[in-house]
Amino acid sequence: MTSEGESEDEGEGARGPWWRDAVCYEIHPRSFADSDGDGIGDLPGATDRLPYVRDLGVDAVWLTPFYPSPLADAGYDIADHTDVAPDLGTLADFDAFAARAHALGLKVLVDLVPNHTSDAHSWFREALAAPAGSAARDRYLFRPGRGVRGEEPPNDWRSAFGGPAWTRTGDGEWYMHLHAPEQPDLDWHHPEVVADFERILRFWLDHGVDGFRVDVAHALFKHPALPDAGPGQHEDPARNHLMPYYDREELHPLYRSWHTLLADHPAGPPGAAPPGERLLVAEAAVFDPARLARYVRPDEMGQSFNFAFLECPWQPAAIRAVVEESVAAMTAVGAPVTWVLSSHDAVRPVTRYGGGPAGARRARAAALLMLALPGTAYVYQGEELGLPQVELADDRLRDPVWRRSGGTERGRDGCRVPLPWEGGQPPYGFSSAAPTDCWFPQPEGWAGLTADAERGDPASTLELYRAALRLRRSGSPRAVADGGALRLLSPPGASYLAFDRGDGLVCAVNFGPDPLPLSDAFETTEVVLASGPSTDGGRLPADTAVWLRR
Ligand code: NOJ
Image 1 (cartoon, rainbow, N blue to C red):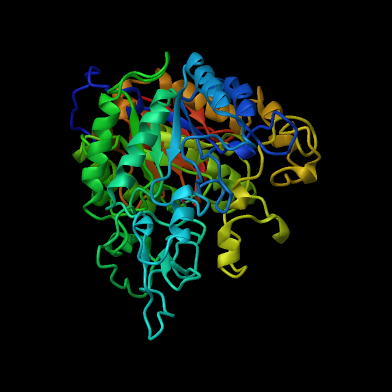
Image 2: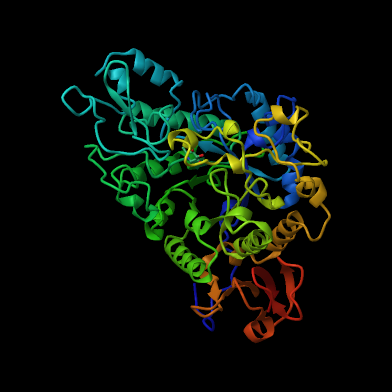
């Protein structure tokens, strides 16, 4: 990052692989499109809707888990890593999805979930059937309990979903799970675990996958002595890297080995990214930017989600700090920043930024901010439609967070409601099933938020995303990818944030409350795109973003 006035080489030769400036669209398959009328989205349904994704203007799709699973955690509890859940289709359906995506010019990422398996995985069943202390348990973290009769968990670790991170088996031993009890953690010191995930990576590369989003990438290795973690676990994300189960050094040699595997594994089917062009993206809940950057050093992964941006409140100073710190940390290791505003785990931005008209305005402004920032970005299905979080009835909630918090936290289901495609009432073209038989019920009142209703309406959020993605593609690839050229234009403490990306595109976001005169601030009023209806005679209204050309 430079200050205004400093110059920066504008060469465009060093763009690197496709993913350095890519925008990726996250598909949560059960909530995307249902082809067979069972009320559950599936792979053929997603394949049919790929032209919509291509027309949005993104470069890649990421499919969240579609593997066989008892669904204790929406598919992040995997019983078989190299097959397709029967309600979502078959392996041939996956191949058809990948082939269609590639034919449309879209890359395909899938989830790799290496921290834990389902309790229905053959390894865990074998472990439970074997006696305490036996080798079949060594692929997981089984331990005797504390207390006179072993009645206390082996340590004080807490599950990220609430409650202890240990469950006792019938024979008295305990096993560890950083998430739900149905998601036992693997022991990554076990050679069979290492070997099996190499097999899984190769399997999906042979099926045409262009990259992997690595789930819980910060937690695979635990401190070998399993020491107590102390109070305040999961309460302050900034302290995550201090926990004995997070962000350990042993992770990095593993990711270097996966980097090599992806670089060396022979080419997959036609259309798939060749060796050297494949991507690993870290889902690492590490909030210290310098520590997060260690996951994306040149011989490790390519991207790491910037959750600090997603979690940042709608305040100019806080967002400015995240931008500055993330760009500096990632540029130092030669990696792009991976901006993200929403996912299947986060409250929808429209609701998170305040809900109602203000929340909707801010979410649109945040989208223009994200898509102007140099680096890569992820868009979660429905974000481009401006969908709000849905309040589901208690008896429809599936997230283990709801149960494990004793009904005090509603969990993440409200952002996983099926997408509205067309029509005036549920299921809005998502399925031919009755609305009440759908995976999650959709609310009334979404007729104006369907893809069909928004398409062609210049005031819609869909058209805002499409226009931004179109302009982003036409920008200087180097400036789009490389944070080194970014120049902040707004002074610290200002109620607006503005920067020049390095190619003459200026993004300005006014956090309010007063309108911001554009000509005073930027010597130009040439607005190429605005998140709000008008710039009010050269004045940028509150909670609005513009892209300007200098
Ligand atoms: C992160 C995933 O995004 C989330 O949905 C899941 O619950 C946890 N990892 C555990 O796999």
